[in-house]
Image (cartoon, rainbow, N blue to C red; front, side, top):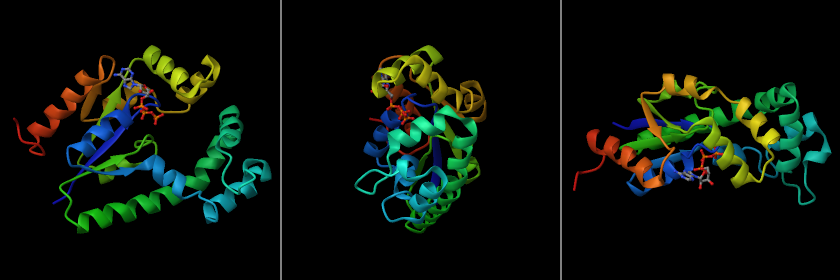
Length: 202
Ligand code: ATP
């Protein structure tokens, strides 16, 4: 029986840090961000739909999606973000379901659905439980601005486009506190892995 663990958290909350650790401990990861990129690769139907909706300016010279340009457009206007999501969400959903089926058939023990917009996309119904990575808003803004070289205004818009942190925490069975050192965060995850029999205590 495959155990499906949803992994989520706000932008720049530390999901990647946790997901890398889970992989090291033997979990198979379905990376929602990777899937989101794959469905708009050069030559895909997804990219064609985006070009039709947002114009040729969102396609770079090499034919790939001009992510930064598209980001500027959609984060400046909520209805444009909604339009983009209406194109990408069904394509992402279909591919993720296909991957879950594939790994279930392979009888993988622990399968992690690493999906930033897990609740927004309705993926919780495929999970045995959901783990969310939590940071305070102040830390989230700080880490986001530093990592992506964003202004406070740009960071605020990205944070505001997601479910509020408290909602995400309330709907998750496991809340991981990532406000302190990374080691402290990972020890919480390790504890969960041990308690649930995915890793042996040493
Ligand atoms: P996104 O949703 O944007 O993909 P994420 O949730 O995967 O982000 P990370 O990329 O893991 O978040 O972390 C965001 C930033 O914060 C990174 O630059 C990371 O190095 C840093 N970071 C993560 N955890 C900690 C921590 N405990 N202490 C200090 N910095 C951290």
